[in-house]
Image 1 (spheres, rainbow, N blue to C red):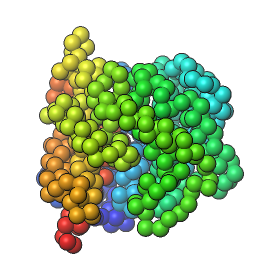
Image 2: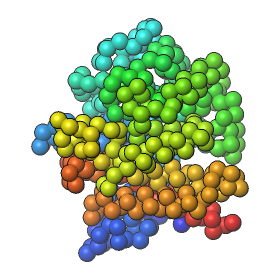
Image 3: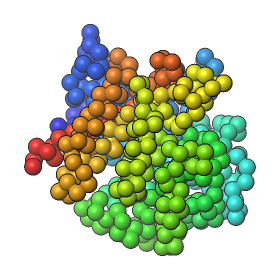
Amino acid sequence: MVYRAETISLEDKAIERLLQGKNFKDLSSRDKLFVAYYHLEKLRQLNGGYISSPYHGQNGGDKYNVFWLRDIMYATYANEYVGAYDKMVESYRLILRIFQKYQHKILLGARKRHYLGSCAGEVIHARVHPITLEEITHEWGHHQLDIFGLFLYKTGDLMKKSYNPLTTDQLETLLLLRDIVLYLTTVRWHSDQDFGMWEEGPEVHSSSIGSVLAGLTMWHDDGYYHQKYSSQIDIHRFAAIPQEFVEIGRKSLDKILPRESESRPYDMAQLSLIWPYNIVSEPQIKQILRNIEKNLVRENGVIRYPGDKYFNANQGDPFGSEAQWPLGFAWLSIVYSKLAQRSLKNGNIFGKPQEQIEKAEMYLEKLEAVMTEDGKAPELYTDGKTNWNVPLAWAQSFYIVARQSLNWVYEMTASL
């Protein structure tokens, strides 16, 4: 059964009763969802944003009780899957406010023919203070194209579902959308380097190209995403996306795939090309999944890419000692649930749904096995132990999406 927000109790005492004397993985699927959503809500702030983790930096390292723009947009995804669209809209309106606050940087960036430097004045920062929305650090690369791609994709998607995340000052908002599109096309998003989802580089990343291609395609929409919606709401009139940009982006993505970048033959970030974006072909989906499942899946999660040094157990010889991210289990479960839904809807032409369902179940079970006893999804494991970022907001959100996606598959199979 798919559960909705109005049926989910978030009272502290109710959650305590559910967990009393029990391990999270031993709860019913309904109660698991309630507990996981409860922990996610604890990270939500009054302005609609989500801090990435409760960690305050007391043991060294970066503070995570701040806003990462990408994390907010993915963390609030869970609200859509429990029917709390009002909360999701509020989160995306917060991202819109941040973009408006730093719109001058977007305009400055749009004047450049190429992106220069990791923290130049024309770059929107990936991390801001949760109250003041001021930029926090200049220490690492902030030029991350997928942030804009995700924003364009999901705001367009919400509008087509009749949930408008844009502000009441439509003219100001439309000017911002125009500036974002101008920025992306000026910096040649389809061929220029950026720092990618993991804020490392710079390199040309297939996950970044695909994200922006999905965002531009959503607003241009020549029919690519039409099948997703029960009614057709023409949003293309609000943001003029030339067909040429979509065609160039598609060619660039096809050219770089199946690699993530010059230095990475595969990367967990490429799962975004399948979900949420669904911007790759069936053969490309199969290749991406083969690469990730064969090379990146580990006991406690999915490594981001071979040789990843972030929280690596052996910095001197990083290959084989990479941190393992539970997030990857959630992501793989979501992907296989989505593939199963497509197969069931289209007469199995996209594969055997039962095999896809079994994979979705397997990865969800793997995820639950590495969550804490009270139902929190850690950022990562190193040497069999979690780091201090527990829970990680978007990993917690992805667990909810994964469980609800599988519930939808069960409902579909029951009705056949």
